[in-house]
Image 1 (cartoon, helix red, strand yellow):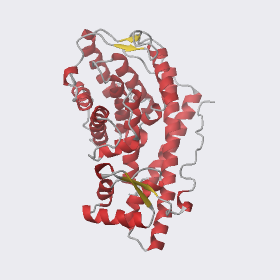
Image 2 (image 1 turned 30 degrees about the horizontal axis):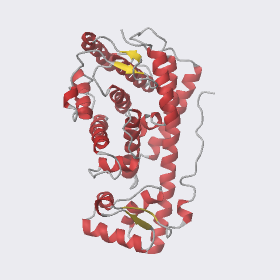
Image 3 (image 1 turned 45 degrees about the horizontal axis):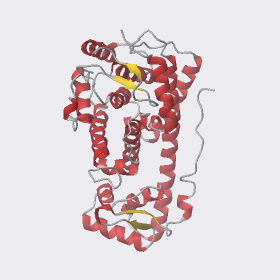
Image 4 (image 1 turned 180 degrees about the vertical axis):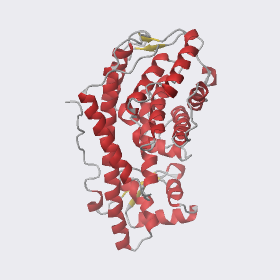
Length: 377
């Protein structure tokens, strides 16, 4: 027996409808290919990876995660953190590919263990990709000597995993995908089938279930960035403890968990919708500005991240604009001379941010804080 899908009420239905409306608007906006879409997708992926790993104590900036995604050495993250980020990147990349795997795709224990190995393969002593052989506990954030949750006995894990996989393939298929994804997350984290990496795997599985729905790409549907914000992380642990109980108790009421996830999806959808609108507006302003300067359009790929308040590296610009190393260097030097970019650091650690020459009219309002709407009043 798994933790079951709860009955939804009118408020839940309303929130689901609002999320669907935001996602449909997003789908329509992305229907035609946009030149800025690749950079936006990478940034959203980086924010999801950073958020999920921050929950586990592996904090890295979004900029460092973007560097790791592109195979560049991060500027600030330690080697240990970079290894965790890169493992999660591999799993997330595969999940993004599985969104288009076709109708013959099926969930299986081998898939779950393979994703786990991608995440944890750099910890061979922890037996990545194998079920745990002993007990495992989720400790209290306040005191690591206190077991906030004790997972099921190790000998029950294969059977529970079988049940979860069968449910993923055939169970509650008429239930809204956002609810099914939330329940997949809850059940996997409650089974806790591996010695380590269970939280990240459960969040990744939630993203995979949504990716398979196919309405919008997984980069736009993950709630991992939202979960990684400090206040949300505390509530995340609280609601898991409230719903999951101190031990495996699948007859408990799971509505608080589903509502928590729907709230997360609603607010993350607001965030992504805002990000897409900002990107469209900013890109158009930059196009107009560089046309007045008589510059090549490819410079947009260097100026966009800087105008968004992010850093630019020569190697990243080279990949985005599909240039040779020499051409990318010349372009960056031209932008530095015009004071649209300003350099920082040396050698491999060199990067660039927006300079005083970039018109303030372009960046005005880009980083202006705005509140998120609370879906459950």
